[in-house]
Image (tube, rainbow, N blue to C red; front, side):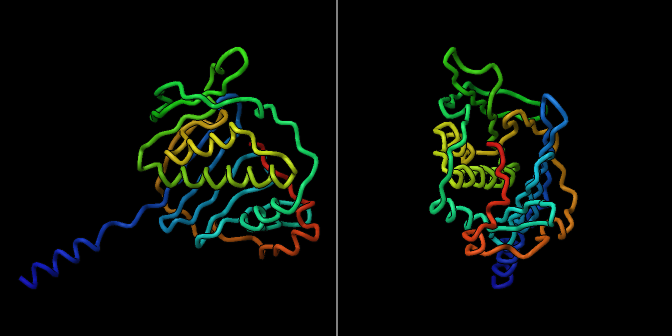
Length: 226
């Protein structure tokens, strides 16, 4: 009996480790791409082509890396949120500010399916969705990376003195329910489980401190487009 209990305990503790996962997106109207990499230990990297920033999540902490002429600048996302509560500026003009996000049923894109959400315009919903979200549990790690990206976008809007539009807040709410297979024109093309080198999640420089952000380091920052 003791032997049987020991075997059952060992079986219960030997569930396979989560594999590395890389999601590849491509814009439906061009060559723009998004690459989301998630390691089995939860470290993640979010990178969008043509943008001077990338997000790295490691050991439970999220960072933004800016690629500046003088070298990379790294900051903690939590510090940016804190800065946003202290700093204001001229609010940017956002076309999405007056729009609402509305569900429009299930759709299939490539080999993936999910619930579509459209932006409501004065003359009706857009013909193309803003967001399509899948509840496939295999894609769940990707959803977490996208959530961190939109949190970063919201922090940058607040840091520039802009209120976060209701549609953006709603997009974040929807992202908590699953993982995007389509977001703002970026469509999920494929998933692969090849091992991701650990250096992909290393920071290229020491993060600046919150005091350094307060003293002007943030002037060099370029925020992403929501």
